[in-house]
Image (cartoon, rainbow, N blue to C red; front, top):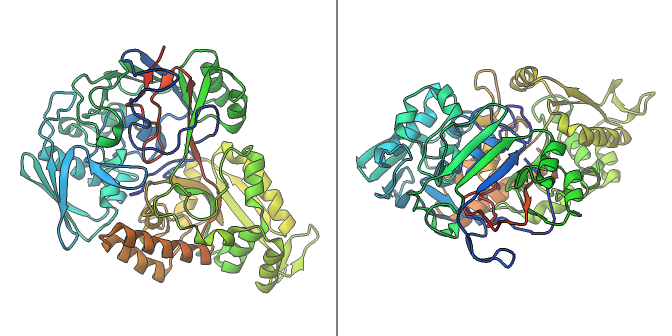
Length: 554
């Protein structure tokens, strides 16, 4: 859940953030909304209008409404329908979108937005300040049961319409991540009339001001169809082109099986597909007529998150030993065929505010790992070669609920055994996973979390986000609590200068590294595989495929 941009790597509710793949013929690096825009290309000439894009996606969101859902799937499928108040570029800068401009009070608690006066929802309602107030209040309303969006604006206090085109938002405390949160699809602006209906209805169909609209909404186990919004004329400046989308429509099919999704693309049943695995990517690389566009997701890497509060990994020496004694990078390259960049810190290198000064701390050093475990008292060995202390085996319970991580988990388990640590793989159902997550009944958990800014560190390591039965599902699965880091979070939230904010979050990354509060493995990659006739491809700042500027050369 991050400016936290949640991305779910697995289906479990705890993984409020993740989707993936890699390299090929056409390479598109991280870009803002509109991707490489509507400009001419050597392959396709000038952009042409018309046609329907047939797109196969891997995951079906449990709810289309991003106010409720934290998933990558919900962000991808809701963004063509919903615009945001502000837009964030890949480098972390903010620019106008539905809001023409904004001011921030000296104390950092009041944001005043001047809104466009020429925007309408696709149900015919005018976009105005009352719509902004209704949306923000909907996100934080208990009845919405938001799994991410409400936490992104946890500092929110109230909003009011100063006049039809001026909205004033008051925060309980300064929050430098507020604009980043507003830029996410999770805070996308929906038609106020629809917000008066049931949350269940919104899970099937949403209405916005975006370049596309849907009549039938999300159909379970099938997909969603979009048609062009012919009145659209308010894309952000960096979108690459203005006016309505080039495509007449998009037909999205839910195809969970990777082989079926890849086969649908290569056989011509669809024009494009997302989330192909490394094996399919390697095959596609040898197939003429196709291109793979990719970008590393910004935010937290796919990582193992140790329980720092209790159990064997409450000992920082044991955590550091696991970090040094397992060759995470080699395992990543072997399992993922070199398609995903190996991680060297809490954040991916594409994240604004990433601090690479600690990369050497993540180097493979089995001798140092052995020394750390010896110093921690794990000097004995049992009959199976596992380390012991006071007759007790060094045993780590890995809690997970996603079959897609099986191969990686087995490789890590084998590497840990060589180190003398027993990894017990506990693949449980979703309900059991949540119950044990809230109780802190685990030693280590895996997930990733995408976000176009370093404020995701507060979401993932802030004391207030430790999951408990009273608080519910939250994102500090490391159960990390460091007073020095909490102070830095407070300072970062109050920072009005982005350079200062990044400096403070750099210190946070150094503390997290010193405490070995996360064991990063690789940087997830967002991919969009397509026929070469699919032009204008790109990615949004949170790493999702951008569909607005796509056009079909044939």
